[in-house]
Image (cartoon, rainbow, N blue to C red; front, side, top):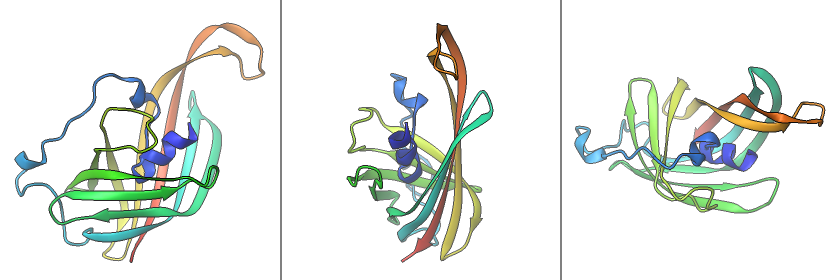
Length: 175
């Protein structure tokens, strides 16, 4: 689950969405302007840190933070790429995405996910919490239902659905 959350971030990331057979396919050519966004995002950004919070039935279960996990590159034509190294595994994951901006959102449609968590594209809408031409703070929030066969104490019980929610904050600095 942590690997998925990391994908959402940079790429970002995705747990419940990866189990769906359908995915969002964005046609950036029909968005007026051919995709892409403001000149402020164009360029390479260091992800200075990312914070992930995991909630089960709206109760905080875990918080993690990674510093300097990788980079995002935004091209003027609406294409981009990412590279992130997992602190846990020391494995670098990289891939490409399409992107555009709408109001205070940055939408990233990941075209390749090198960790093979999913074979489908994944689109993530990041809310821009704070943004300037040199620093950005983004937040993505997603939920899904997960089925568990044990209670929080490790006792096996009848399968129960739990609402899982992930909140990811990314802090970026332009190179």
